[in-house]
Image (cartoon, rainbow, N blue to C red):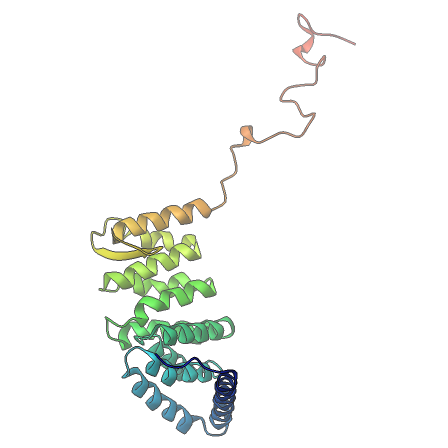
Length: 256
């Protein structure tokens, strides 16, 4: 059993950790300056580093290689930057996907069109099994732009049911009635997917997920106005003539 660390060794480790973080931030700032001065070679170097880092699979090595790159790319802009962040979203390491997803969302709030086009390109550019295709619908949902359902239409038509399921859940989150038509086309789809809810695994059909999303969206819509004769009347308003002035002078009526 190793000896318990003393106060001095702990303080030294903390200091080295802080210095390492300072060095990471300094290098990130330098790369951003390089991208301003020479965008093309800097982005090419970043692309090569992303491809190499993705080869690490999952674990601390992948996180150390790719999370700082995701943070740098999140400070840049342009279609090529969005594509690289989408690539990072396909990492096997969860920490990398979280960083890339957050960077894409931040970019989308300011440059939604660029990010949306990258998400649409991903359908034809990435392997059908890429984890990114199951993550990208939620990037759209979190941003909440009105154009979200249009972007997700292609994901509903994807051959992989897990991608379709992610798009259905994202559309339910958006709550946009523009998606109802597309969702109704899937209401009888028998393909099944594995679900994880609060740590419990289960299985559901695409059709059942679509029906649940339809119900959620319809419940969120404002109630239609009641028919004219059922609308509440202002206080003091009566349906017929005022008391004592009806009946046309017949029996029970009054004349002045």
